[in-house]
Amino acid sequence: MIKKNKELNKPNIFGVTASGISGHLQSITVTGSPNFSQAGGYDYYKFFQSGTLAVSGYAIEVLIVGGGGAGGDEYNGSGGGGGGVVFLASHTPPTGSIDVTVGTGGSAQANNNGNPGNTSTYGVSSATGGAGGIKGGSSGATGGASGSGSLGGRTGTVYGGTSGGSGSSYVAGGGGGSASNGGAGANISGTYTTGVGGAGHQSSQFSGFGDSGYYGGGGGGGGVAYLTAAVLVGGGGAGGGGGGSNGTTFSNGDKHASNTGGGGGGIGMPGTAGVGGSGVIIIRLSTP
Image 1 (tube, rainbow, N blue to C red):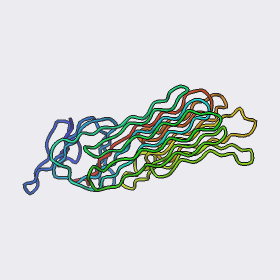
Image 2 (image 1 turned 180 degrees about the horizontal axis):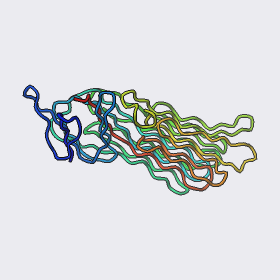
Image 3 (image 1 turned 90 degrees about the vertical axis):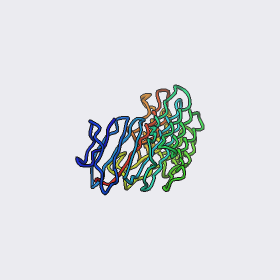
C-alpha cells in the first residue's frame, strides 16, 4: 500500500497520511503498485494491473483503456479491435476505496478467431475490450470492432464503438480503433493491400504515455503472400495496434504496444496472430 504524502510531494511507502490544510484532510492511498511520475505540474498514477484507489480532498482526471482484441489466425486473418477509451473529467471521487481493474489483452488461437480483450473498470465507469480478429479464408475476413465504454453517471467522454474494415479476395481488413474504423482490404489493378488498423484516440491530458498519447489502435489485417501479385500489408493503427503479416516466411502477426489497449495484427499464413495489448488506467491530479 502507498499513501501520498503532500508535504514531500511523492508516494510515501511508510504510509504517512498527508497533512491537513484549513482543517481539510488530503490524502491518496493506492494498492496494486501503480507507477508514479510527475510532469508539467501534475502527478500521475499509472495502473498496469488491478488495485484500489482512495482519494480525499483532491480533484482527479481518469483515463480508462480496455484490452485490445487478438488478431485472427489462419489464412488472411483480420486485425483485432482496439480497446475502448473513456476519459473522466475532473471530479472529486466518493469517500472510500474504489476498485481499479485493468483488462488484459485477448490471446491468439491457432487456426481460429482471436479472443477479445477484457474490460477495464474504475469503480462504476468502464472501458470494454476490443473484439478479436476473424480467421481468414479466400474471401478475406472483416476486422474486429473496437471496444466502447460507460461513464457510469460521471462527466466525461467515451471513445470507440467503431467497425473493423471489410476483407477482399486474399486480404483481410484492419481492426477498428477507438477513434476511427479499420481500413478495408483491397485489390486494385492486381495489387493486394490488407486493411490498416483504425487509429486510436489521442489524449492531450495523457500525451506522455501510451503510443505517443494514442490509445486503443486497431490491428492491421493479414494477407496471403503465395499470390503471384504483390501483397502490401497494412500497419497497426496509432495507439498500439500491431501490424498484419503477409506470411512470406510464415511470419507471425505483430503484437500490440504494451499498456495501450492496441489490437493484435492478423496473420497471412498459418502461424501465430498478434495478441491484444493490455489496457491501462491512469490517474492525474495537480501536484500539490
